[in-house]
Image 1 (cartoon, helix red, strand yellow):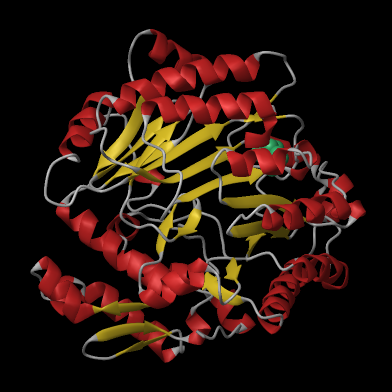
Image 2 (cartoon, rainbow, N blue to C red; image 1 turned 120 degrees about the vertical axis):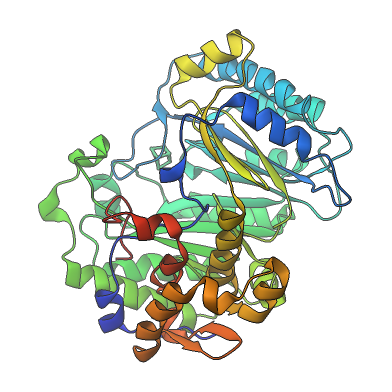
Length: 462
Ligand code: SF4
């Protein structure tokens, strides 16, 4: 078991803004000079070589029935009949265009439906979606596969869980945030614990291999005493994974957040107490800290993958499949091949227009150079394994790690004095005190961050 030590003094000291490294380079580096032709060239190239990677499919369902005031996701709040069917029509057109680029023998080992709200789709639409994707890509029905969906308990009935299992999903995550009715009203997201946790138990009965719940700390009216009640209800239900996200109040950037009253938010001291108390409670309750807000039961695959060195970080957080090329479908979604990231148009109208014109709706991205590839691997190693084997990197990439990363290693020496990391000739190891501060440990290896004056576009730890 890897220990995590929460040192509030250190967390406060190192709590500057920083990327979450779901990609490297981060989205800030995506540019419009990279377009659909670049993507198509690299997608075709990914079919070549001795070790062709399996595929991962991501489909973004942007619709929501109502607005949660804290939400900074890309979503469309609507109840207009027919919007989802029209969207699926376009999604299939996009899937067909991607499918032409990839060898049909490449299996879809990983699939994720995110949003918005995937369960905005009716059961019929969900069936149509999975059948439609199956027409274009070789979906797997058994074996080593990770097919996951984000469900909103407020739009998911008990009858939907067996349907999702029958459609091939074997992982499920659900948003809870907080069960406290006062908090729920303040963020316009009211959901009953009984129904929510009932779905969790049902998913387990239906054979889902992993069920994950999302919580948020820092919401209006939260304090540790009240949040503890939510934590106890959640832990009693024993989800395999728990993610605890920090609410970042940025009303100037996120319009919906203007509906949250600043005076109702917990103070920085209360927020720190919420974080400390949550970490202590979850680890005491048998959950292991994976990294970056994620906890899992010791028998969960994430813990096993971390221990085996195969844990991977991607746009959905942590994953056990590191070797897939990610094909992203739908508005605003981000795809990843070995040497590029690509992002789709964010507005539905633009997305439809591009597809009507027979173009992939990609509007920006970035092609990685060899330095990016190396730095991405180092940052992944920090974020997922808590250790960097400098000697192994030197051999694998034909560099002298100490020379190549001399400025980064100098920055880490300061962190070593603070107890965040330990350095020896061969390894950088993240200490238990540093495991809550993976971002600052990784940031010295980010070439783009070093050349910017301020990393202020990113969120903070607390
Ligand atoms: S939190 Fe989920 S359900 Fe709520 S507005 Fe955001 S995307 Fe929609």
